[in-house]
Image (cartoon, rainbow, N blue to C red; front, side, top):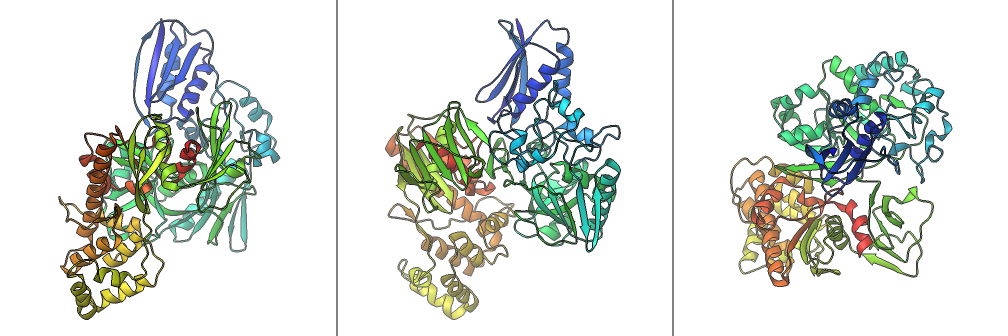
Length: 640
């Protein structure tokens, strides 16, 4: 009989599985470790003298993942015959594991205050990766020769076995801190600690800090206002719930190995008066940010603002190192009660592998899916030297990236929809779905191909006022009233007509929001604490969403004195009714058995809650390991 440990996880990345194998290998225990759709099964040699010690090590050091839910153990027939092994096929982009975090704060460690600390199973490895195969020679670390100790570590059993980027103070990367004409270098524990102390004190005193990290460039600052792309980094785990209203899963997710960005409600009145009722937050993930956070907390700061940047910008203080980096967009995680999914971002989801696929080269949003003998590998296109396939699918409106006699443009909504079908392996099953990222569209999968049932209708603000005046009987009087008695609103409509704005930008402008975007309307809706919204007109015309009726309805409520918070909430509630009614209708007509939701706009609490309520008899399928946003298109493109 084999002692069996079962770990439930909804994510397909092998990170946790490989970490488990590393621990098992370090104890020399025979085992079989297998990852299935929703769980990892570890069957151990039951009579090994170190089994208990191995299990205790797993319990104390295994990183917490936001995708792990529970575990159980039981006896299984048979006995494993060999010590398990793992393959490090591609670089990771994760937070630091508990063991590496402990190491950088241990004065006796050779990586004390070393910001590039990571192991085989954690850290910002992807930032230094150049191209496949994933070996040191194909990373920017190829210029750095590891010291004998680091080289031995990567060859020995343990969590750094097969580590491609192993380094320490002795063989590592010097870092420079610049302030005006002054430069300070760090290349050992003492100088690194001093450097982070200087940087933290500068931030405390109101200076800005540009920091080149193992996750890319980050601009840190203290501020009374936030830009739309800024994130509040919470520095002190003990005080997180003093500042934010979190459910249990949100708190655990912030501190998980994935270290996602979450949009949460603020509790602290000082923060609410400064930043509003809700905000994007994150807990420090990689070495530079963790070390900076440590010193900032010692200085009395519990949070700091930062922005992730693609390139360096000017700042009062600049901390950098002389290596090229390739950053990924960060992972935004959405949690609604017991449902969680990735809303957007490349980090954590990519690189990745799907065990099945067609001989189709899929290209979307600078990502590519390439078929080989192990399935399909997905990553940024520039990481591959070459590829061959029978067919090429690339998003329409993108400049063709390759030449092929069998080239096919594909739509974003169809590709996104098929990514969900592929992840759930629902091939051959009838399904209907809605895509919502920009313009809504509705799709049907007959078990073989995806069909647009209700195509997206492009919003154009040209002639908007005349369109509203002729919408229906009495609409002309509404617009005359606006022109004569509400001159500011009429001037705003004229501005919208002359601007190249999308639907939610126009909506936010009519609502008078400072942040004129979908995110601005979403944040405004989160301020509502009542029950039940107004019915916003989402009249379908030719089986399509009617933009003019939608905006005219909002204007009518504004003229009636309805505030922007209640209206914003009502907008998402009405969208929820619109989607669920039309999906149910299409499902009934087509005899489909599944409902699919895709597109990042569904990562709205008000909208998703309404859909959950309306579709409770047929819970919708969503992406599990990939974002529901545009990044999933590369996955679905393989199957069109």
